[in-house]
Image (cartoon, rainbow, N blue to C red; front, top):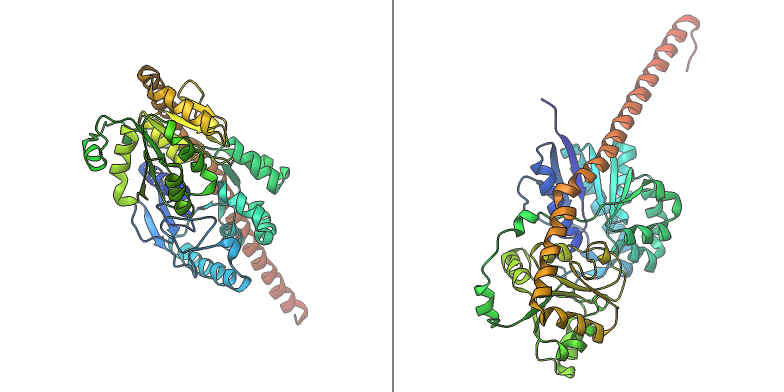
Length: 427
């Protein structure tokens, strides 16, 4: 029987509440389901994942790139002083070292181009373990606003067997920031989704009753409430939108957005907070109940899991034509793309779907089929397995080289002993 390969996935944020956390959870579960791998996650989170070994990291500080709904009082990495970052880095390094000793991985998978790549590079040298890196987007942005980490990160990433970007836009951005010489080992693998989890139509009478949605048209936003998400334009457009707008999420911009909704008199805008692990079924109900998922981003973001989840739930997306979103949302086919920072364009496109049920049904069906055919884990997983093979091959080579080095030293010692016996040389 072939021994299972061991993969250790590293993450420095919680497993819930952020895109990289959702990605890590889902990828780990899919890898474990193949039966070919033993998978472990090392992250600052004690919650268990079925079929996956979890190691809880206790960081010196709760730190984030921008914000995180489960770490509301966290500092930003760009705000950490030198001695604070020393403690943070040391806490992760020591704990991950112990995890590597215990789990003995054949490959390491790092999330984000940041200091975890430094640790993976160190482990590669010390233990002979190859690693791959996934670039999510916020990590690139953090390297542009805080250059303290840039040089060490670039040196570490250069030793990564594969650098994976979640969208073509993210890849282009990564190469612009870190250099074109990394192009040969950089590829795009989009986020995946288990579309079977969204095949079953859930009854939505629970949320209809809880939120008073019976017979109402529904527009939903799901995500972090930050300036970059462009929600101020959705609120500005709200009085012209012929439906109720429910905003699911939390973040640093929430207070401003709530006040802005009051100022504009947008009475059809409702903030219902962050949906965590315990709200997953309710979130699925919202996806399936919604007539439209609105994503009015004003910056070039990566392809978020929210888009895939909504489309898998037969919900068309109206989104800004920015970043990685056009990779999956095709204008007029499975959703509508609009000009960013335009409340007028946003309201017009949303109402176009709300006013035309036949159009909505067509977009919804095409959205669902897009996910099944192009973004299901059955399609995405072979691409990741190919990337892991690069890391496994690097590990085998590194370990062979270490054996050769040890054998070579043994030969030298033997020669020394023989010469000493013959001519009595003292070394």
